[in-house]
Image (cartoon, rainbow, N blue to C red):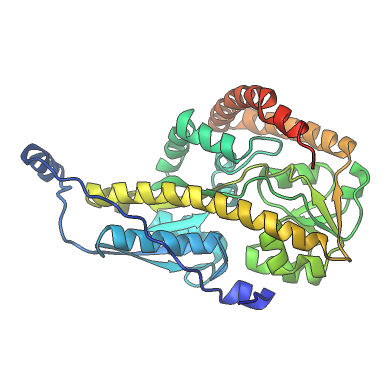
Length: 373
């Protein structure tokens, strides 16, 4: 099937593959313990709703939600049935946080920086400009304390977060003007969420937060002058190459963006323990799958973009990146000085980042620098 921008946003069928799951056999003592805590495994069925920030049928990101739902349905033999609603189908895309918090839906998929206005420190659990790549972010969350901090932060909002994919290093965005100096950002209206948007503002631009389904129209009609999105695969499918001339790299603002699954804490804790564990296992599988799919598709579609005669792939000048990094340091210092929990999270992230950068400089960087075409 050849994807056009229209059916890309409105109607792509994505197949799913279920993962097998073996349910543990409880001993007599374990059964008694489960009965005492109200978590005895039973045949009770749970009908849940999952809302997303992604357009309906959106490849990979919304497809991951469908895949997750299908996995859990099969793993639980139908006991946990999750219906997925694309952005705007049940609630507006950027209102998913409140929908799950209130219990209007039990789950949502999005990215933590979308909730910066409600939970400023949440941004660190998505990405930090000039921060860490996908591998490093996953390591920080899983093995260096990041997930504990994330869950502590969300607990006050009746939510439990799970990592639910990573975009990998993103592209720097689509522009209809050249960026030769930091002055070229002045007056630029650009779709850019999170901390990257604050850096853009410090450089003289205007950050605009738009849901994924609104970006193409916004750029086409001049609501925005430039946009970042994800990478070559999604960018090509939406059709940015048809309405913008310059495609810049690197994605300094999002070097490895974590996507999230948020679950209503009260609803989650009311589940039997085996269903809770299935959600954890399935979310881990999706976290891995999304990154691999994006790596494969972005490599394929970069080759297609290179063949578009009207598109020029450019690299941000070193002086521009250096100035943006200076702005980032200043903004993060100001932000963390005003928010004690944000400082706690940022200190944890940067402590691990220092170790990770040291390791990758000795290994990956040396390896890539010696690769010849």
